[in-house]
Length: 87
Image (cartoon, rainbow, N blue to C red; front, side):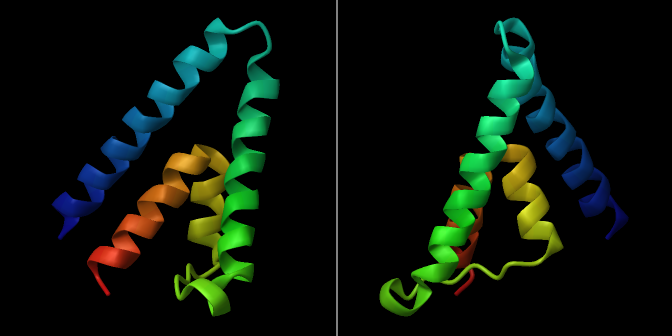
């Protein structure tokens, strides 16, 4: 079971670096990362607010909020795919 935790930590670190490298190459890296996080939080909020109408529900907890704030829209898309697969 520890292997899954270590693997997930390595995968998250690689994904964060893959997002951080293009941000650092841009002229305004902090603005880019902030907008990415804001888009992820907004998408999570929209999905949570429209859950009654769409039938798709993502629980808002510290893990989903942190994931959507750090990784943005790809994290929210990943959460949705996981929700569909394990329903």
